[in-house]
Amino acid sequence: MRAVRRLQQLEGIRRTVACLLVVAACSPAPAPSASFAPHETKEAPRPGSAAAEPQAAPSPPAPLPEPSAGAGESPTRVELEVPGFLPAVVVVPPKTGRPAPLVVALHGAGGRPEPHCDRYRELTGGRAFVLCTRGTPNNKHLPEEERGYFYDGHHRLGQEVLAAMDALAARFPDRVDVGGAVFAGYSQGASMGLLFLHEKAEHAARFRRALFVEGGFADWNIALSERMKASGLDRVAIVCGQVKCKTAGDKSLGYLKRAGLEARLSYDSRGGHTYGGAVAPLVESALRWLVEDDARFVSPAGR
Image 1 (cartoon, rainbow, N blue to C red):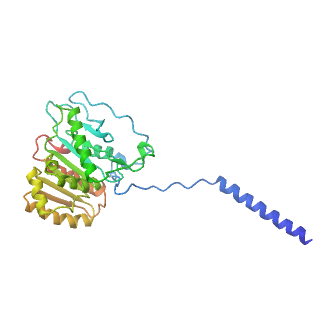
Image 2 (cartoon, rainbow, N blue to C red):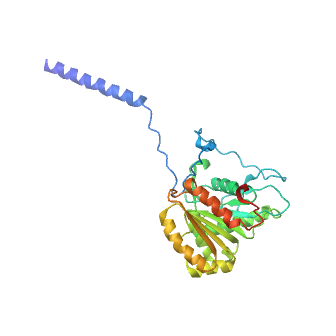
Image 3 (cartoon, rainbow, N blue to C red):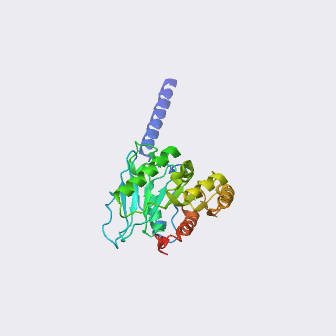
């Protein structure tokens, strides 16, 4: 009798385990948690914009079009082959009969060049070439549309920037004015970009104005500021969304001004480490101030 009860208990356990296995097999797997690449924060949508509405999952990017051929057309986004580096992204403005100015935009670690090119295309009203370097992939085994990129040291960043500027001038020799360009860096692109500009006088000489967003706010002193001014840089804007950027940036602002550079710092404590959200209008205002006396830009952001 005891053996029969034991067999009945074992049969009950077997049935329970079988049911649990069936339930587990039919349950949906948990969705992977979303994560952003380090230091690269996606831009928050502006209130009332189409981007603020629920959106379907993005499809892979379409092939980049060839440059616009005639005046009056919209700016286009193209790939630029850069010898020794991955292709850069370039916003090509419509032809106007005169060379267009250049903005060189560098993303943060884990970012991509396309969003930065699109943002500065908007801010310049499509009146300027916007050159966005790519850097090195974080994970080359991911599909291209899922990869983030970073800059492998400021020496490598500088080599890529100079090679990309030369490649751009060679591809559009009569359409782009690479002299007196605007440097615009975010996060790692700003901090390493500043080290690149500091490295040699001829590097800084390629740029007349510079914008540093959430990076490049600390590595200034009077001697370096004087060297930058002597190289031709004459106006600098620092934009901050974090207090550590604001604190160090205020100190750097004093060095810049003592060296005779025009300089300003903008800060919004609601911003955080991003070039979007509450920081976005500060970036727009800073760029407008940087180029307000440059007739080549006419009027940033169409204003």
